[in-house]
Image (tube, rainbow, N blue to C red; front, side):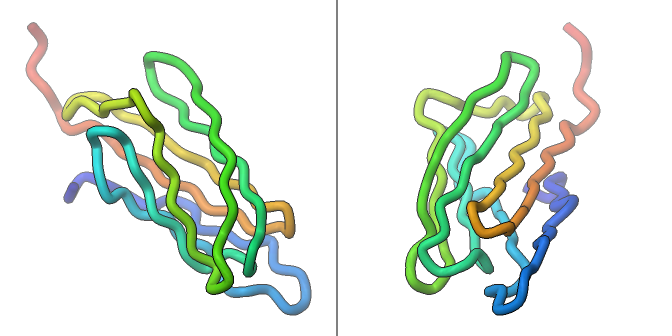
Length: 106
């Protein structure tokens, strides 16, 4: 996962914000990400963009502002790039970008 680049871990932070939201990939088969720094119990919407299309997920952060996002049925190939953008109901935002390494053409 060394090629993984966390691009914009942003929080449009109103007063009392939990902190800066972050995402990290924990599995590629199925695609699973863990988030932290969201508001306690914040509802989030995630959008996965990849060459095969767009998938959406909703989830909720726990009392510590952590969450897990699993995109069932989505397996990320080594040579395929993708991005996930998560937007929370209280203004938290985080993004994750996987830039595919140079792969030989077949």
